[in-house]
Amino acid sequence: MTPIKQRQVFYLHGFDPRGAAYYHRLYREQAAQQGQVNNLHIDVSARQRHSEHSHHWQLNANGTQSNYCFLSWDDIVRRHWAKGWKHILSDMLSFMRCYVLTPNAFRYIFAAPKQLMAGLYPALFMLLSMVLSGWASASAATQLPWQAAQWPAGLVLFMALMHGSKWLGNKLAVFWLLRIYVFSARWANGRLPELEPRINHFAGQIANAINDEHNDEVVIIAHSVGTMVAMPAMTRALELINDKSKLANQRVVLITLGHCIPLVSFHRKAYAFRNSMAALAHTPELLWLDYTAPTDGACFPLLNPVTSCGETCAPNAGPRMLSPRFFMLYHPQRYKKLRRAWYTMHFLYLMATDKPGPYDFFAFTAGPHSITSQLKERS
Image (cartoon, rainbow, N blue to C red):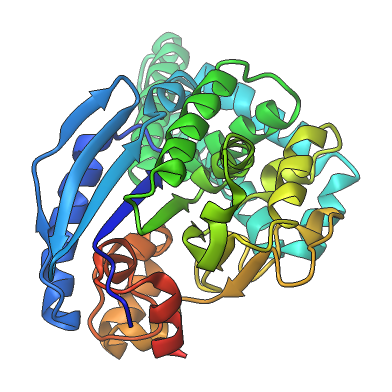
């Protein structure tokens, strides 16, 4: 088994306004914890900003040098991060129009009913907040002895309670789901022009790494909404490769984690997006691993993102649908708690585990052996 001397890793984050500093800290902390499980001790360098939209840090483990490149689009996320009630209510109406009050709703119901239920979660939270706030403010206001003051006092109390419910909703990541749905609908309907040049920028960096013969392996990892960004970025990157033989021996690996791709691909107008996926699914030289957990309520578990939207995969091509099997990677008591923390569950793909098992994010990104070899060992 030939060890990897140099690896290039690209990481595409999800719909998260937190930038490279957060993810660098997360990787360093979790890699140290995982080292106690897999005996892979990873030296993580300081973070350096190489360009406006990419940050790098070096990983050294058992003689293998991996350059970890964080491809940043958190600035775009922040532009679409609705904050006030006005924008939240507008997003809710958009969600209902694009996902519920449409024939497409049946596609989501049959493909992944838990996902549609997750999308309705913000609506139920908002409705419950308004009902309870209205009841509490009206009950309290009627206790005032001055009838003329009851209405304005009730209104002020109602606004205060709704402000508190918005704070709670942000803490519980309620509106995070809503923002993802609305962002995806805008993208599918061609209303995100600012995303196109960023995708082209990412594609150029990935293509340069593949063309660089010094890289023994090139790994592109995308998480959550980042899996959507990865589809056109990877397709365009492959178009820029000057020698297709550089894809041989599964040297280039695409890993999608916790994908929610149908939020874009199921929309009727998302022709270009579906074409990008179809192109990847007809590139047998590309090793595409798709990890989703049935316990992750913010993804489409074990749903083939290509065939589910009507496209086809060529023989020996397309995504390999896999589960990280989190239940095998954590002690039972801890796993029981994690299952109740749905937001944390969606990020477990990036975190250290209690026990070794079939999935190891840190071995994939910094281990001394190729991902193909690792898969054979774990099978």
